[in-house]
Length: 335
Image (cartoon, rainbow, N blue to C red):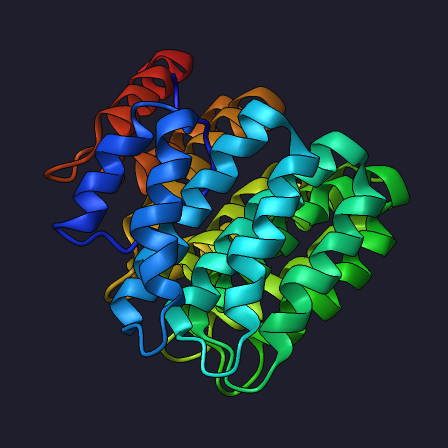
C-alpha cells in the first residue's frame, strides 16, 4: 500500500522502530497488531521509559494517518482519542508524547477541514491544539503544531469570512503567541508566513491601500528586531517585492524606487542577509526595470538597470535565474 501523507516528526530508534518500519510497510493488517503487542503494551507498563512511550506515540501518529486513509476520519479519530490524546494527557507524560499528539492533531485539523468544513476544523483546532499549547510548560513542538494549524486556517477564514476576520484570527492565534517573551523562533517564523499571506489577500481586496500599513506593522517591524529568525527577514522581503509594482502604478516610479531602496536594497546588503532576501531584491530590480521601460522611458529604464540589476547579475555565483532575468532585461532594453 502507499502510506498516506501526513505530518510526521517521528522518534526513530534502531530496534523496535526499525521493526515497526517493516511492519507498517506491510499494510494496516500487519501494522496494527504489531503496534498493539510490541509498542503499546510495553508503553502501558508501570515504569515504562520515556523512550518506549515516545516510540509508541510516534507509531500511533503513523497509524492514525493510515487509518484515516483506509477506514475514514471517524475511525481514525477514535484511534487518536485512545492512543494519542489519552497518553498525552496523563500526569507526567513526556514532552515527546505530547508532541506526537500535537502532530496528529495538526493532521486531523487539516483532514477535518477537507471533510467537514471550516467550522468543524476550527472547533477541533481550539480544543486539540490551542488549548494544549496554551498550558504552562507546553513543549515547543506542541506550540509549533498549533501555529502551523493556525497558518493553514488563515486562508480559508479569509476566503469565507473576509480579510477582517482573518486578521482578527491572525492577531490572537499567531501574533500574540509569537510576541511573548518565551516565544521560540518557530512561532515567529510562522507568524511571518501568515502575515505574508494576509498581505497578499489585502492587496487583492476592495481596500488595497490597507496592504502598505499592514506590511509596515506586521512584516517590516518584526524583521527589524535584533536576532529575528531568517524566515522573518525573508517574508518581509517577499512582502516588499509583492507591493513594489502596486506602488509604481499608484504613486509613480520615484515612489517605487524609494520603497525599493529602503525595503529591499538596504536589507539585502546587510551583513548576514539570507539568500532569499537578495533574490527578492533582484526580482524587484527586474520588475522595476521592465515597468520603467513600459511606462516611463527607455532611457530611465536603462539607467535603473545599469545601477541596480546588471551589477547583481554580474556578481560571482549569481544564480541562473537571475542571469536569465538579466538577459531578458537586456533584450527588452535593446542593450
